[in-house]
Every structure is written in structure tokens, then in C-alpha cells.
Length: 185
Image (cartoon, rainbow, N blue to C red; front, side, top):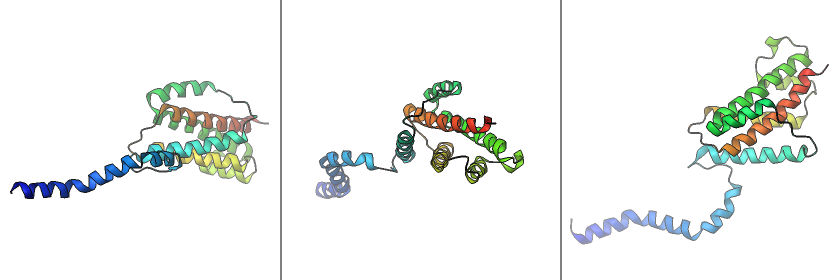
């Protein structure tokens, strides 16, 4: 292969990557302005989607609960420590608290024996059908459940500590509401 052929081949091979990099460089300002609107990124598949959904859920809850006092449960402090080490584990544990309280509230208020409430979803259905939980709280429950499922089943799962703490706070608020239902006379 002579030098001319080699140069032509190099240009053919590197032309598209060079054009793509140049386009990214020239459009970086516009791309940055669009980043907050992203719901999903394939390159970092879960983190962008999880954090965008979490932010949306958090904003919805904050507008509804501005006047409600924020309660820090003793379990929350343990979850904060866990979030530093393993955000995924912290999310799974925070969800477990919501799930346990939902089942307990459904059993306590629905009059159903425990076998009729085998899952958190069936507990939510029973609480919603009995009008014991608002539609907004049911939506929060579903959103947290979906985020928990992402944490449990998607690989790889890289999430910031602050996102895990935000999830913990949302889960604690819902868990406290469910605890009140489970303990009411």
C-alpha cells in the first residue's frame, strides 16, 4: 500500500468521527441547555432517567406538602449512612419500609386477613379502594415503586448519594402517612 492510498484510507476512516466531534463541540451550548429536558440517556442508561423521574416526583410532592412538617424517622438516619456506601441498597431498604407499612395499613384498616394482602401492590389497591389513601399518595407509591424496581433490576446502576437521600426522604414521608393509617383506631 502506497502513502497516497494510506492517507485516503485514514481520511475515510476518521471523517465521520471527526465531523461528529466537531458538531458536538460547536453545539455544546445548545446541548447543555437541553440536558435538563432529558428523560433518558442510553450511554448512562439508568442514572439520567432515574434522577429525572425522582426530581419530577419530588417536585410534585413538595408542592403538595409544603405545609406538612418533615419528619425524620430513626430508620432514616441509618438509610442516610447506607446511601453513602451503597445508594442502591439504601433505596431498596427505604422501599421495604413503605411496603411493610402499606401491608400493615391495609390489614389494619381493610379487615382482611394477612393472606389477602400478599404484596405491596395489593395493599395499595385495598387502601385506594377503601379511600384511605389519596390518589396523589397512590401515585407517589407507584412512582417510588417504579424507581425501586429500576434500582433492583437494572445493571449497571450508578446513582449519586444525593439522589438516594432524596428517594429516602420521599419514601419516609409516605411511610409516615401509612404508619398513621396502620396505627389509627
